[in-house]
Image 1 (cartoon, rainbow, N blue to C red):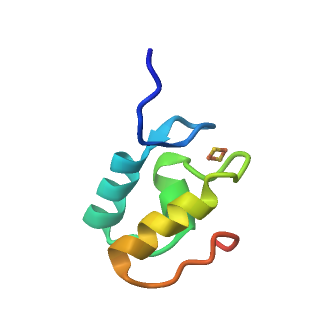
Image 2 (cartoon, rainbow, N blue to C red):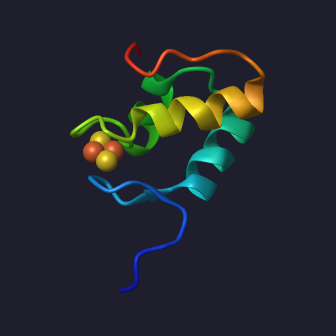
Length: 68
Ligand code: FES
């Protein structure tokens, strides 16, 4: 299976579009909520800055990549 171009979380194979959809539909404002919903960010943690960026872009609020 080819790797999706917008893959964000390699540990749990979660894409940017999936995270964007979750944050938008469920009004998530934290990485912890995203991790709880789809596991993204709950493994090695290297994707957390990307998840924080996605949440920030949608909510317009700063998100600390290293806190839940
Ligand atoms: S790449 Fe997302 S937790 Fe490892």
